[in-house]
Amino acid sequence: MIRVILQGSSGRMGKVVASLAKEMDDIEIVAGVDKVDGEQKFPLYASIKDVKEEADAVIDFSNSEAVDELLDYCVEKKLPVVLCTTGLSDEQIDRVVIESKNIPVLRSANMSIGVNLLISLVKEAAHVLKDKGFDIEIVEKHHRNKLDAPSGTAIALAEAAEDGREESMNFVYDRTHQRKKREDNEIGFSSVRGGSITGDHDVIFAGSDEVLTLSHTAYSREIFGKGALAAAKYLIGKEPGLYNMQDVIKYK
Image (tube, rainbow, N blue to C red; front, side, top):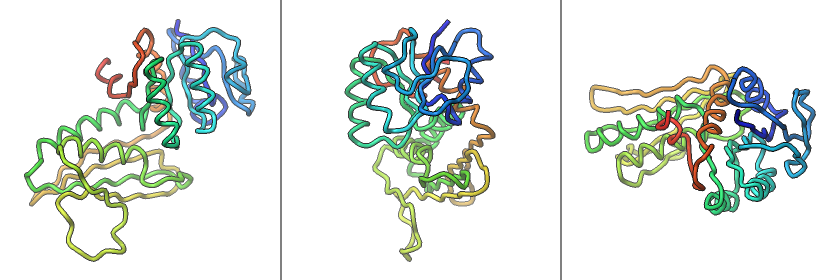
């Protein structure tokens, strides 16, 4: 049985992860960390440094303000950590890289298995279609309350296309202030915000007389919770290092 501390346990994603873990025979949430009471059936602490339970890994769905203390704790306890929190500062990202030399850290822009397979497919398509006259555009759709645009996943998809083409690309987020022909090395972004859309990403390869579209649609947040739990299982027994969900889907 893999014992997990869940930081951000009272948030929307924390509740999803806790619910999914209840249905699994090989993983258990032994403690939660949150400043809000989530009415879960495991002990809850306001700070991870107060956790008394023994654990094998930590899953974090909290906020950037809690990440430094989280890293302190995991390094001290030699615990692998699945870092799902977004919006980290450049300094925090640098620290994640540094601490990954001491403990296994898995950080990914999106925890969905399907999205991470899409990232691999985009990289391959961009490589195959390089120098064949295909333009790349990314359309992403999310719920009305999402604050950032474009999404971190859209950026990750663009970076995968850039890797596949093996050249530096110009990311274009807004064309309203320019009146000119599209450049060959552009990747354009379009962001849609509305309703309760969980997440929808289309990567469009537009060529002459044909269009290839690679897409992923999220219908619930459960896919991110399942990915986080799979990532925690993956990290058990791993050497210190910086991992991502690409490693998990290859392992699977």
